[in-house]
Length: 231
View 1 (tube, rainbow, N blue to C red):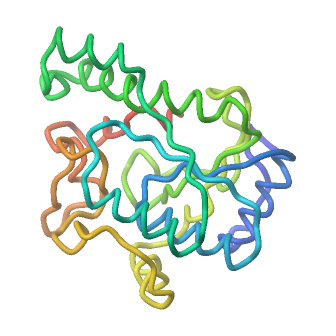
View 2 (spheres, rainbow, N blue to C red; view 1 turned 120 degrees about the horizontal axis):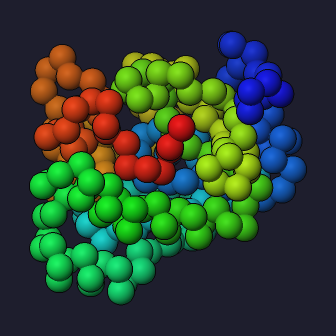
């Protein structure tokens, strides 16, 4: 290990990255699932390889119906259990009563506040009993993810192991894997969405835009993270 990261071959497969990360964690590991194509591919890779991997999801209260459909399809196909985490209802009530339903569009500070309540705080509870967590992040997705490591120590979440098995995959590779294995996918992808989060904060992307251009589209590219993946 060097600088908080673990030695992984540059041409390691997602399965190999998962195996290295799970060994490094030496304890329970779960995938943080947003039901993206990336997350569904990781579930399939782990399932086919017999890799023990838990699964949790954050229900922010503002997800698209199509996202829940993917969750239901995964439970049916893989017979898996999803551990759902929700924001503290008192915090949501205070936010919406004090600032309204769309305060996150008024400033970066307000958007971070909403993301903290709906995502970051629930994530901290989800990770509390884990030795490691898996994400579907890819370097190609945006400028905020270009320096991802395959396996690293997540010092912002208690020093647990963070595993990014698809970091080197291109969107083309992801789509090819999804098609070959006939994986469930969000119906919004067929409408031009390439990265799907909360409904009010996600739109279809335009030709030539990167995959996450439709997330918080009113902000600058370097700000387009919700706080789940602080670096």
